[in-house]
Image (cartoon, rainbow, N blue to C red):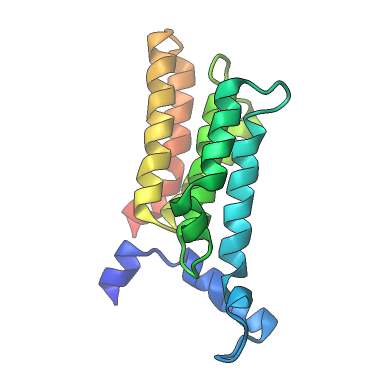
Length: 169
């Protein structure tokens, strides 16, 4: 059981337990009902990817939206009653924020959203947390290269805050 908690942190299990209690899920309930949290998470991830094409669609952004929409893996993991749709949403949120703020400082709201997304990833799936942290590390490297050390330190702090409970526990 401790192995499962390490490999699959408890957030998704708690979310599904709450969802099941809310809708009164039983073994005879429709499958889509228990999978709804994953489906919503996957749909939100696709919507975030689509936001890359706004307000002025570029060919690269439109291609990213198209590929994400038809990607078998992205659609399949969102249709499972597993944590991967929620983990995908967390990673996509970090990547979209980092891409949107590529040539400027992160706003306090963007920094808070990054902390929230990395926390969500860390408490949902450890591989997703690593990918989200990698996106923030790449952002820090860009900031350091541009001699924005204060910005790089702020992004690194955003990445580290969600990990405190994992290290302390």
